[in-house]
Image (tube, rainbow, N blue to C red):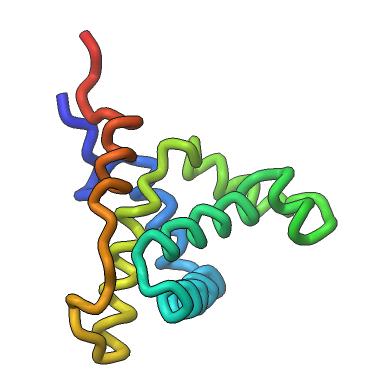
Length: 133
């Protein structure tokens, strides 16, 4: 049985992508993070790593406390509960969309970025979509 959810790898990936896209503050921060990471490193992997760091910062108690020196707000706790397990999120899939949007907006040739197919394959190996049976 396939675990895809609304066109995404799984529900957790869909939920994080939805929150990042539908909240103006998250959307602006994610667009800035994508631009900075892609301009600095030129790879989807760099954006993936930055997105994972952002999710850890915003939606984990320890990550929020480390980044902001305070307890995580209840609003972010609710969002984290909605997203579910961050270790199941396919950050590469989300990063691909953000990099594509950034390249379109910046007029960058689609072949300008190095894509690490091994990174995507390793995610799929670690998170199989087939249920054991």
